Length: 511
Image 1 (cartoon, one colour):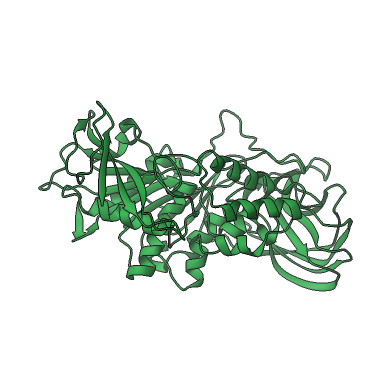
Image 2 (cartoon, rainbow, N blue to C red; image 1 turned 45 degrees about the horizontal axis):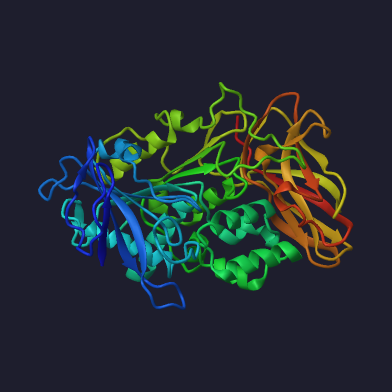
């Protein structure tokens, strides 16, 4: 089951087929061992796949004095962390750490099925089994370690696929606390909102996987077809549909463990709304009451040029994360340590802000709110946009000062005359329509297939934001025929889209 590979700190040992038994190399505070565990074959094959890891045992961890464990894994296209210094803040605090290469990356075998519960879900379960076999790891009961997890992006995805797949397969998860950052609720919503590909990110993710041939051919073919036609083939939707918390939520599953969420408000791959939906939908009520949500200006961030965005216009003195300090920690990393200490070690760390959203605005201020749904309605009248070609148009919504924090939506009667009509929507801020900039660089499509005449559309989501609109400036609805994130995937033919009787629903923060 286990295969010892090399020691990581002081030297390299010969490979062996012996079980993982000893920790032969020692750093200042941790002993480090590399190894692999066998997991299930790739679908359609018969050869077991090695999932390789580095295990860090803190000084003083013994069978008589066991310690909790924290799992870690990398982002898409990356590999595990083997440097003990990277986790010294955890090992010094009395945690064991295991960092692993996900399937298709690093030294692990197989191909990446992008956090499929039947593939990567099994990999994470095997890693947890490995942790549970260490006699120096604290257990709640046999084969159930005291266990937390950290990691961002794809390194957040493994946390959810691991916990949810255990909940599906065993009726409960062995994870006791999670700290995912900048990860997704739904891959299809993130990569193809309303079936409109986010071109730049689909291209970048495919390129990052090419070096290791990590992606199965069906995924590469699907991305190529989407790029060529502007539409996402059904088989690609089917491949990705199960690969995130949204699918488990549809099946009636919720995680009943505390989670510290970190999500990028300027992230235009896994935008702020993905984290908000995880917090609101993927947890039980009890778990949410023990969880914390932090939004910051960061994540997977590409600039918005057409239409022009704020592009993270933070100066050197403006914090990207204003909320971790508000919650008593200088950084989100430190906040994560306190969260793990409280939930895995039972320490009183003075944490506050449970059950709430803590969002860093575009200007670097922390807004603390109990809910992010709309609470204020504004009648906007009629909105007209060209589709296919043309320039963005900004429609005034409200004058500053006003603060928006959460997910705005709109209702409208939509009329289109073309085929597969697509326009892109976002909130923007400026002194006039001419200088209004997209808040935190995100837009979402509104799409109508075929001719429509005053077709009711309700609850159309705009990008989730956190923004202070100062006095003298205006909050706008910007409507554009094109968006940087979906280059080449505007309307199939040139035409127009009219939205009549538009009602905006805004998450306004009370003064």
